[in-house]
Length: 272
Ligand code: FES
Image 1: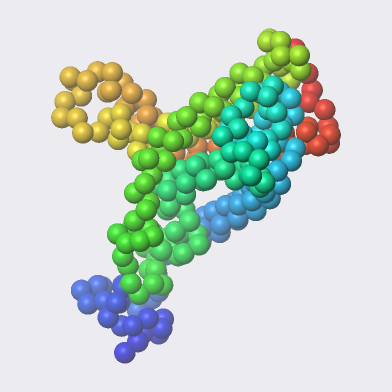
Image 2: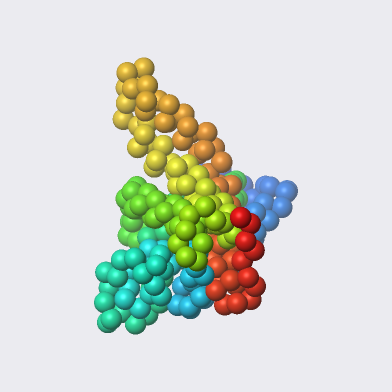
């Protein structure tokens, strides 16, 4: 027996014990619009970042290094940071050095609670939206492989902290001139600064971070420091979705800025 939607009659929202609603859904607003915008935004970033990750060139315009290529861990890196980078991978690594490091921020974002909601809805219709029945007959949530790996998010958060720290170090180096003297800045210095501020805001607004600083406590009154931290993270956490998008856009735009300067499309304006 099947319904007019083509699903078996005894599964999913058509299963026994579920309200017998003949319509596919009852919403009258344009519930699909956020999902469409999400899909367009994520596909645009995936397309751009894939091109740049495999590009392997124009990621360093002294003193700016693209966030896609930091830290640069291969021997085939251009000598970023005056040649003081960490070449953990020797001459045998011939691919773009970005491929060695992007897996970590990618894993952090892929397993993020917000992005999970976003791409489950936008790409898998699971569910398409609140109060819109999903087309899938079976629902196993995140209890089986591969989605059970989403539980690794907390560990990706731990890895995200050193990455954000390295990007902060890159910002500091962006306030030197070509001779390595401090106290100079170009427009790129502030592009990197704005990007790292958004990266930190997104990272610290993480739901796992909120649990790490404030979870498993019975009495906040006995842990005033953690209580303060939890309140701080909670204020950021309210804006996690916004910060997810802003930081995603900023990391792409920062890479684009470095690419344009490094490729000679325009010169970085010196500010002081
Ligand atoms: Fe989004 Fe952790 S929940 S980064």
